[in-house]
Length: 195
Image (cartoon, rainbow, N blue to C red; front, side, top):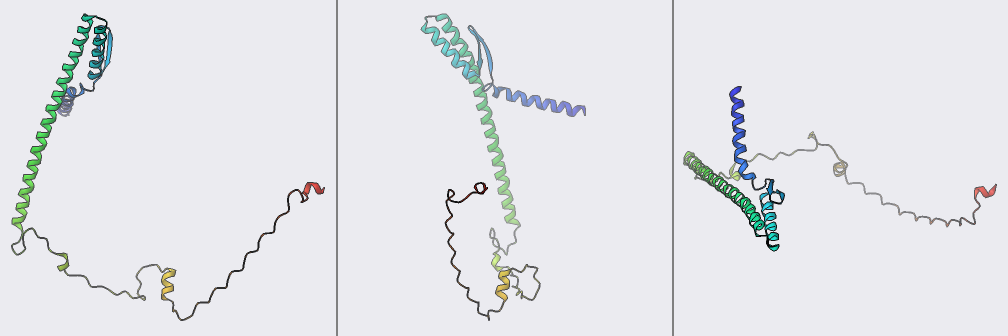
């Protein structure tokens, strides 16, 4: 049990150290510059220090302008190094993926060649048998007398019923009576008024 815990700790530490470099790009830093703290990602800090350097140049403060430019340059170096390492890691992963794909392709080709060699010689290689040449089942005639397990519907009964009797024609509809117009509410006596 002790060795498995140690192994898992080492595995986690290894993953954490690999991801630290990539996190520099998106990580939030607190930079203590000459005019207080600047907080943000490296790109945001670079932009802020460049802006402060421009403001210092406009106010003819060359010392502070140079100081802000040096702070911005520090974060630019950090950012460019992290991006360079990310690119190198990405290229390595792509190279490994290409190697794995080439190995899979080689294995697939070897399997296909082995399958072709294992096919019998009387069949042409690479051609599948035609399903139309296979024996077909006989079609069975299911009569109405046999119990097929299906539910009888009114439509099915109508089809089975003899068509000897002619249908009785329908009687025409009687016209509707028009409703009589109601008397106005003012003319009709209300039950309260009758009292």
